[in-house]
Amino acid sequence: MVLRPYKGWIILIGLAVFIKIFSFFPFAVEKYYSTGIYPLIARLQRILFGWIPISIGDIFYIVMGVWLLVKIISFFKKLFRNQINRAFFLYMAGRVIQWVLGLYILFNLVWGLNYNRKGIDYQLQLKVTPYVNDELRALLKMIVGKLNDLDSASRAGRNELNKKNFLFDAAAKSYNEISVQNNFFAYHSPSVKPSIFSYLGNYLGFSGYYNPFSGEAQVNTTVPVFMQPFTTCHEIGHQLGYAKEDEANFAGFLSARSSNNPAFRYSVFLDLYLYAASELYFRDSSLLVPLREQLKPSIRNDLRTLRAFFSKYENPFEPYIRKLYGRYLKANNQPKGIMAYDEVTGRIIAYYNKYGDL
Image (cartoon, rainbow, N blue to C red; front, side, top):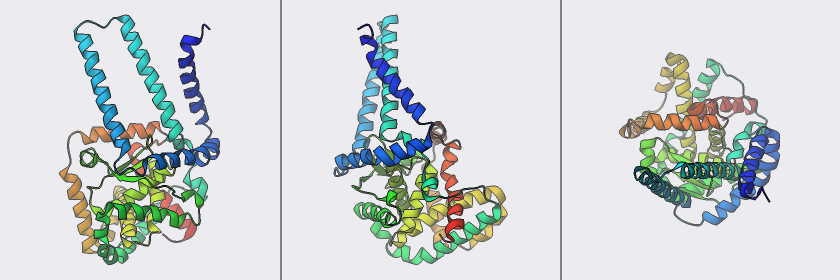
């Protein structure tokens, strides 16, 4: 009976320790969580919230933000009125620790453990190795060719992307196309929604995100429409358990390139161009110039439109937000932080080396 006051603490700490130890075994995470219990959890979330037209996850964030603000104001009121003593401070510290532990447990149970799985390379038996400049230049040359070929057809159907139901349905169908060969890409009970925070996202620098607590994929629908198909496919990749950003990028690539909609294929290759061109420019900028000049004028205009869009929302806070997010990624098994997105380039090269095509 002596342990009763500490029962809650014992359960919370015990669960947190178990989850942490379990995360050190990627094969077990892959088998029992990522391809075991997680797909059931994720589908249940999508069934519960997917039919609701607005983002329940975003509303949850708003409610939690207001609740937290009220608590902070209440704390400082007590502080200024000298109503805080040692017992109250210890009580509040204990409550905060309990909340943090509970959030850590919930986050990992509903999604976070996917950061520690074997992942998409293991599933597809891809061997990702460091690549040289010649491989990167060859990849970029293929991407430029794909973009030029898709340019006219993609513009013919671009206006349809402004219809969000069409955009989200087409993204879901693209995953079901590739699930014929690999059933782990099967996407049932879709739940993709425009983000309530889209305009705020422009200032914070995000084009989409996944809410692990509601299972919803959120898309920033204010960014240039030609980028939205790949963003949508990327976020669905997160829903399917690819937590790492480069893996979600790769899942998005595999799905969007398989779409029968040219606008989707154009979107993914334009995004890949940005990653590969950035890397080649960093390595040897002289190699990029002739490849960039091979792009059709209309494609170069899309790139200028994209740069102008993001330049419009530049602000002094964004670098700090990016830095904070980079630390989050590093804490979740992505040592390159914000640069983790770019690692998809190596995976695309590995895919080409194995299958001989993009």
